[in-house]
Length: 294
Ligand SMILES: Nc1ncnc2c1ncn2[C@@H]1O[C@H](COP(=O)(O)OP(=O)(O)OP(=O)(O)O)[C@@H](O)[C@H]1O
Ligand SMILES: [Mg+2]
Image 1: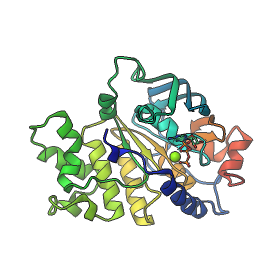
Image 2 (image 1 turned 30 degrees about the vertical axis):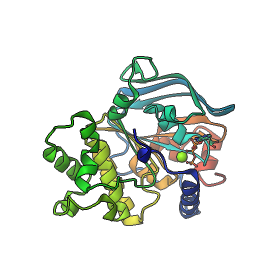
Image 3 (image 1 turned 90 degrees about the horizontal axis):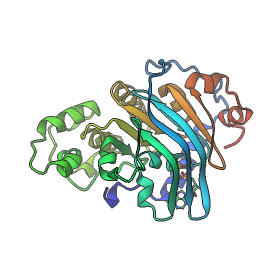
């Protein structure tokens, strides 16, 4: 994976996080939130990803503690929790992006369809084709719209004919109609919301099994956010989506399962989204969801 595909730097995301959480933490918050979108509240499927006692350190600082979770296939799983509790770190465990951070050290087992992705015979680059990722800040490459989508395909097969896959990926990312007459223009000329859909098209072009999304809509306006949410609901028909969000209503609207991480890098509760938002087991979770802290 290239440098350009790396997560945005911490300073940028800190600012955007503050902007967003001040907007989302209003006093009509949650617990009462209905989980009523069509995508949510679906019955569990067998797990595609299982983490067993995952622990992560950055140098001597432990960021995640004993994370056990089973993520169902073709469902949307949301990860919520206060800043610094390890949500992004956990996402990066799934596609071994933490390998790219020198100080990071991962222990435990994380399986994708029963195979531990940390086994010595797993190629992280091949793994990342099966587990695509979309970041908070849209990060198209300074290439044409077409080449952005074809990027992951180029790596696999330099001489392929990608027109059909590029078109299908842009259609699935709900961007085709807006860009079909300008595929040769730079991806950087698109609006922020279009750029993020372009990044989603790029992530799904190699036909991954899992799509990781780290606050994919937090830099976008409400219209673009709503487009991304609709898109996630559609993608979850065919993909397993794991999404980090600071926006509680968004988690309640779009996810089937919700994992709540709290400060110290613990996974405190993981359950059906409706249960988490209406009747969580843990008082700390209820306090977080109702905005008493975080
Ligand atoms: N590259 C890194 N090097 C050192 N420490 C890191 C690095 N990335 C994250 N950490 C630390 O690990 C902990 C978890 O960070 P992480 O980014 O996973 O949290 P997060 O839940 O995604 O937070 P946010 O909601 O602010 O994005 C924090 O204490 C953070 O400072
Ligand atoms: Mg994060």
